[in-house]
Length: 213
Image 1 (cartoon, rainbow, N blue to C red):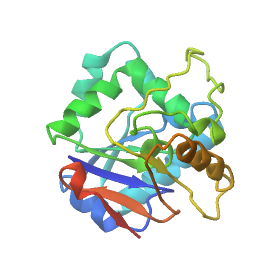
Image 2 (cartoon, rainbow, N blue to C red):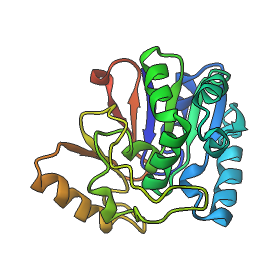
Image 3 (tube, rainbow, N blue to C red):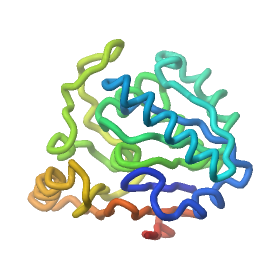
Image 4 (cartoon, helix red, strand yellow):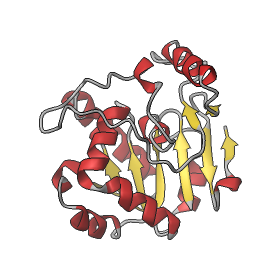
């Protein structure tokens, strides 16, 4: 299992990111910003340039194109060595993963060590057991066109703890994450924090998680 979980943007361990996927074929997933088309395009261009500057080969992969077609998505994912998932609204990203079947596909591919799961913010927080608590930061009722209104509260269940991003950082959501932490502490839910710039890197089993930055 290989993962690169950044609080914000590429983070401070880009050399680790490159080492995780030597062949460097990256699928860029922007669906967490499907509610903000202009920001989506601006971030898409910015991330494309940053990843290509690291020597990676990047192609767009829009999960909306695979809603209801998980087998086609699996074929598309197998053409890549890594997914890079842009931040945004975690609830929208989770919906997109469920509708496309990426939630089940990525878990299987990670267990087989056939792909690297990488990205920042929303990409990091949805891989825990549950999204409850994240409503302090993201609006679960913000539903883009083409998406169902039903909220998916289950995380991908990959990590046994929640990740709190933008912790004590110069970010617009840093104040809100304190309420998220209050939720975890009230219910005795284990969590780990990431400041902007910091990254969790996984190079094997979950026991190999290392904070970098």
